[in-house]
Each structure stands twice: as C-alpha cells, then as structure tokens.
Image (cartoon, rainbow, N blue to C red; front, side):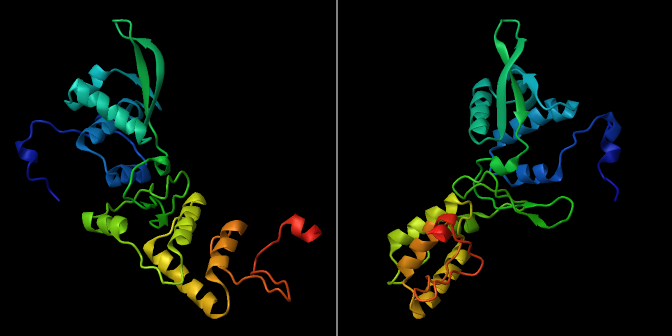
Length: 250
C-alpha cells in the first residue's frame, strides 16, 4: 500500500537510521495501561534513553526529559513520582553529577509488567503463541494485570459496581472473608467465578453439608474451591487431598 503523503515529505526515515526494539508483550502492556498523556511521554522518553541505546538504565536529568517531552518541570517531576508509585519506572542515585553539583538519577523501565500497579486490565496477549498468557505474579489486591485489549468504561463500571446477590443462607461477612482469602492466595474471584462457587455451595447444602462449615474448612485447609465435609464414619477426604503429617501420626 502506497503512502499518499510520501511525495509531500522532505525526509525519508529508514530502520537503519535508528530504531527502538521492545518486546511485544511489554508494548501491549503499555498500550493497555490506564496512563495519562504525560505518563506515556515519560515512558517513551525513558525507553528512548535506555533501550534505544541498548542500556538497561541511564542517568537522565529533569531538563532532558522536559526537552524531549515538551512538559513543564513541575509536570515532569509529578509524572515521575506517579510512574514510580505505579512501579512502572524505578530509579536510583547516579554517580554522575550536573554542572551545579546535583546528582542525577538512573532511570529504568520496569519490564515486569505483572508487578505494575495499574488497574483495569486482566491479561497480556502472548507475542509468540497468540494465546493469552496469564500473569499471576505480583498481583496487588487482585487488580493488577494488563491486557492487550483496553477495557471500555462500561465494562470497568460493571466490574467495580456490580455486586452479586447472595442467597439468604449465605452470610455476607463470611463470603467477604472468602473473597479476601482468594485474593490473598492470588486467585481473585470474578463475578462468574463467584456464581459458580455459590452454585456449588448450594449443591453441597442440598446433600447435607453446612455451607458455613464448608467455607471455613476451605479457608482453614488452604484449598481453592469447596469440597464435601469429612465423612465422620469413613473419615474420607476430598479427592486429591493429602492430610498433614500431624494428622497421619495422630
């Protein structure tokens, strides 16, 4: 496909004139992140000064970043603090000093996007296989994950505000404890997963299992899902359960 604007241009940039190589997954994570315009500028500037010169980190002054991004000094400083808080950018003191004697900071982009504190995303598209690559490591409060497809305002609002309606036999405070427990083990519940687990609890309830005791047993044992309570006569355990050594020796 021909570029209709080429004949009006006085320049002809080529790949061999210089380029910035970046992993597709990291690129998708940056695209999907809920960043401000200033944050995007600072991220690209740091990539240019580091990966653009095949370096992991580089000593960059605020003046340089202002010149590269056309941002004011105050906006640049506030944006750096914001990106550092979100764990997207990290920095450390440099041995290089400015002409005024003030030390510079070494800036680097955190390529481990699964540790970013960026909300509203869920997963990243694998750059090689084309299949979704789950990113559980570094999840914070079940909110940090990145997606190659940015969510819409409607889906975000539904995720945040929509609460599942609990049946009368299920105490809300206990269910909230189960939610917190799943977040703690880095297996946060989606709305669909909550419905499935409540349906399973209801089936266990119909077979004579107390839902409250089932939930308490799950949290105490460190399980991910729900299982029938131990049979007092046969002392059977759920399939795949390995009792602790203390119980075997008791």
